[in-house]
Structures are given as C-alpha cells and as structure tokens.
Length: 266
Image (cartoon, rainbow, N blue to C red; front, side, top):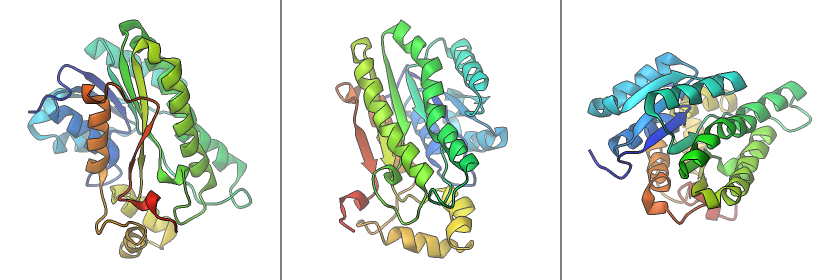
C-alpha cells in the first residue's frame, strides 16, 4: 500500500457506479484507499457501493460506506455527522455527484432545469456547508469538486443546465478557495472530458445514439487528440494529487483531464 494519503480521512460522494467498470467516484474511492486514506464512501444506492468494495481488493479495510441523497439537506447533514462519528475528522471532501439532461431552454422543462441545478450545483453547496465547519475547526482541509468540459466549451450536444451548473462549480470553487485560504483549506476543481466510464454505456448511449455504444464511443473519441479515451482512473489520479500534500500550494484552480480536447479549436 502506498502512502501519499496516509493518515487522511476522505469523504467521497457518488462513490458507486451505474455499471461495471471505473466510474469517477468508484475509481477515486479505490485509489484513495490504495494511497493510505480512510474513505467514507457515500452513494444513494447501497448495491453500487457494495460493488465498489469488490473493486478495492485488500484495501477494502480502508473504506466505510454510507447512504446519501444529495438532493436532501438533511441527508447530507446526516452523512457528514456519520463520517465524523466513524473517523473523527474530514481531511478531504470530494463532491462527485452529477448528471446531464439534454436540451436547450426551449426544449427543457422548468422542472428539469430546477432538478439539474439542485443535483449538480446545490448539492455541492450543501455538502460544503456541512463539511466546512469541521475543516475550519481543525485548521486544514482539501475540497475537490467535479466539473466537466461541458462547463467550459461545447461538447457535442445541447445540455444547457448541465453546462451552466458545471461552469458554476468552477467559479464556486474559486470563491471558496479564496474565502478559506487563511484556514489552510484548499479548494480545487477537476474538469473531466470525454471519458469512457460506465455512464457512457448505461445512459449517454441511450440518450444520444439510440443505445449504440460503439457509435457514441466513436463520436467521443473523434474529439480527443490523444489516440485513446481515458476512464475514471485518470480522474482519480488527478484527485489523489490534489488531495495530497504534494499539492499544498495549489488552490482555486482546475486540472483538466480530457486528452487534449480543450486545446483544440474545433
């Protein structure tokens, strides 16, 4: 077992995955445990958490699980309290829950817009609201928020609410980073691009290519300069760095994990 996060307590939301393979939350949970952290892995679905535990191998002893509905303030508060009861502190907070809905302002209903804002952005606000007091009390912490290249550029389809909320996360993180810098709390954002995660096959293919997984993978790969598509482990490796003391002087910024897509002009 490596030790880049030895002795640290990490709280990760969205730690399950919608299918087999390396979703971002699952990969971060496993990588943090491999690096010596004790992990409180939270998700709305216990079965998904149980599957994540099977991926952890011998490092499963580093992980405790809990149920959370990030759409509910009381559920988030309970999750944070449970983490504190189990571990006594929160050194790392990873806000990983999110999802997209297609459409622009004409096609999208007001209800879908509101749900997207609550699910993708308000959830981050609430998790920080309840976790930050513990970081302030201990005088340290690292928060990692998950955005998306959809929040910085066009990525192939109109998903106006998802794009707006992911852009909001980037600025939310910058403001938080400056506000709490004197308390030695660092806040950064990871901006994943066109990764091959289980969500592509279980959700996006149905939404965009009528269930044709090969077609959506081909579309996504065409946007990436590197000759392969990353997965959740690439996100997780960036998160390990940002959570570690190696990143002690890094706050209020983003790491883009997209194989060079954002550097392209088209």
